[in-house]
Image 1 (tube, each protein chain N blue to C red):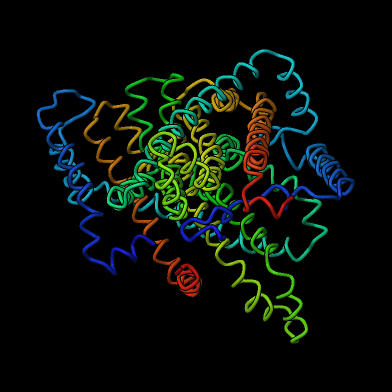
Image 2: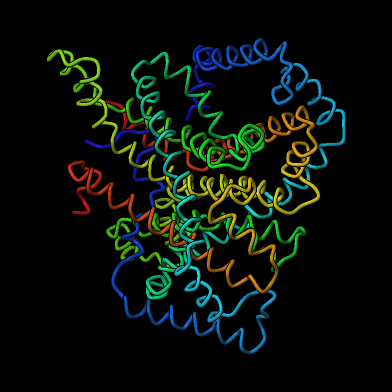
Length: 275
Length: 263
């Protein structure tokens, strides 16, 4: 059976396998060459420290931060809002999306509204969240949860709509109803759609999280970057080391989701070709 | 997809619209007597919206925002498809650079705003660079992924039939990778809109993001709400335009899928 039409899960999913394949030696060589080029440009004076810090000073700053407490507190604050927003926004999206998906009328009524809210740039909500909660963890969390909810709800609805009618009929004949039907029939069928939605949402959540820190002033990696930028060129190595940290967070979270997806959905045909 | 259904079946349009009407009415009614400065009555907001954005001069904010967006997004789209295709054709380069590309793809790009500001100042160039640099990755990676996914048999057949170079790309690679490239362009669109606003809020003296932020800081919450509504409308219109363009470009793809999907 193919996964049916709207928003097929494989679309727009950039798998890390496409990128991470053999050729480790070549990659290391390119990495070292890039680092060398960076240092060379700084040493030759083409890159001045007030524009772009040298490679050694950035790595030294990164090491200094890694061994200090500030960085880990910032990472913790960033991850806290990310996780809470994803959990609450995602949980609501799965429950509400499933309920809406099960009724044709509810689905047709709700989809345009959800599509509309999805296209609202979430930053538009930031001033309201700032007014209500100030530069707090709660403000970041609300922004992330709001941003995660709409795209994921759509994925869930499409996932639930794509259930094979035979499964639903079988469940009806076997008198599987209510919560049990939801857990045993609906959720597994919609799982690949939900997984794709979650993977995308996790990335969106991280972006909104750092935006809330950069603009809203909530504590976390984003705020550290802004603070370093405001302290002038001497702090640029610190700024770039936090940018590297933000990228590493992205790598870890994206990798974690891809791995979890493969583990949890190993039984589904969308994953089988990779086995 | 949804638009097409609406257009084709007007009866369904009603089902699609009643909830909007109910929600808008609910907002109107519940906010009508509101004395909270944060949540002014919808009627007040809409009156002000007309004054500022239709009769007034706030339109100019919009023009500069959209100019940044359009240029940044166009650069990202062309560079994303171009570099993606180039990396696809040069296997060794692709493998060697893949960790960098992946790193930049998963990096939450707004963190680059302060860094790009230190290099490009806070003018027009900075905003275009930020939008383009952030939005290029989804298109680039989806182009690469889509082209990698082209059936090798098709490529071999084309080669046997004597196709090569541009002809091969036009008649085999692009149609096969098209849907995923479009999906990438769509992600890039969303990123562009976000970065358009972020760049204006962080450092600007104009644009819709700046308008919303200054309104909030000056406690003119009615003005802030009008900016939020206008921004929401911009997001919706741009996405709608994209969906229409997508259907126009990929009509053959949806046609094929629709016939496949009939059981």
